[in-house]
Length: 257
Image 1 (tube, rainbow, N blue to C red):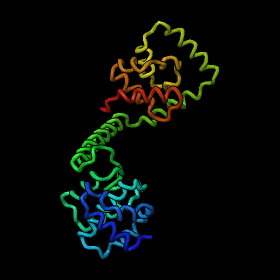
Image 2: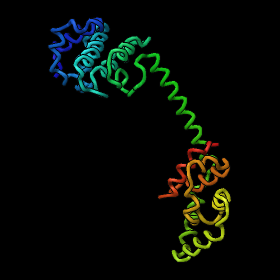
Image 3: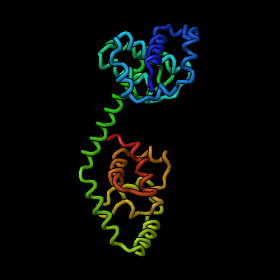
Image 4: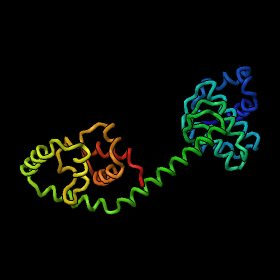
């Protein structure tokens, strides 16, 4: 339960210069065994702050930030300062993000003040720079994924047919085919073998000897881009075991165009 005394004392802490917080011996002692405050439900914070002035609310946030750091309170993503900052935002009190910057600079909780984890340098400038870069990378990944989908439209249906053709063959026939292919292409280069797999319009890659795809990452890096794309398109839907691992390696070299 959050007492009115708790709130008033937190406000008093919040009015203190962070460099002088340890001079507030009585207040620090008051909160020493009250870490439950930092894990209260957001609704309780909402109810208890209704009648606070804007300045009091801001000081309450700062007090929670400073006390959490001093006493190493647990709270993580449900820490009190997060809920109080949401109320500050609802009141539109932090247009220039100086209050958020205070939270970043004066607390070790990676979830304060916005409620999402951030492990970079603790300033509002660096926080926004991080999010800008994160959004840029996310957009690039999304665009790349869309390009791949457009490129391989119908691949799922094609693979269903290829797998069905493979299942028509008995294990005995598949075994004989494997031995035949291993002997026939014994002296063929890795690229030539993979091109045979990529150009097969009847059977899926699983039809061919698994030895053909047992190649190193360096060898995959040296494959022609168009071959990588064709192989990945054939293996990117419902693959298992070695074929799935091979598809993952191929994907890293697919430019998504």
